[in-house]
Image (cartoon, rainbow, N blue to C red; front, side, top):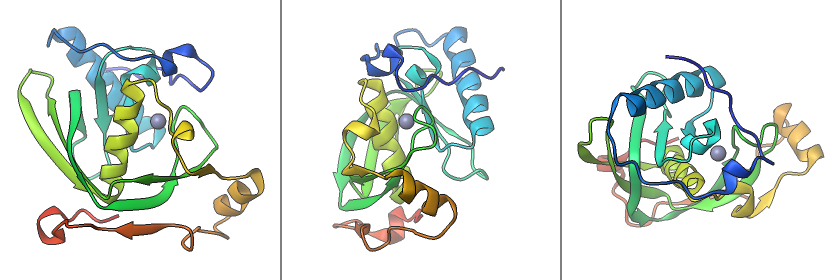
Length: 185
Ligand SMILES: [Zn+2]
């Protein structure tokens, strides 16, 4: 296990489409372990392989530090519902924030490191993370799909806790039944 360097905006690797993982081998396992270490060290919510310079369809996500990180190989979104508009950031675009509209509920199918297929679902922050991280695998950065980026004075106020953009953000849960799918932000 080791930390990997996080690639930042401006590096071409972030704009490329990643290849499907075909071999579920030791190398993949090491990559996933390193990505989890790097994610935890960075304090972020999700990390995609191109962010550590690897053009493979691999993502790790950890919304709740108390829970084991999700590892998603060759993930695909299979269902979405509702809509949420809220703040979003990216480890590869440090110090910046945007306001992005995403589905409120997202279900994905993916493989684990051993090649077993499974599904995962989430609302709120986890749904947002699925969309953001899977976009990375197609070379899409959130600042190209968000409604707007915060201005430097807004970032300063946000960092000081003086502004939360609540008037601009919303959650429309759509037809999601929160009792089954509740992992509210
Ligand atoms: Zn990102």
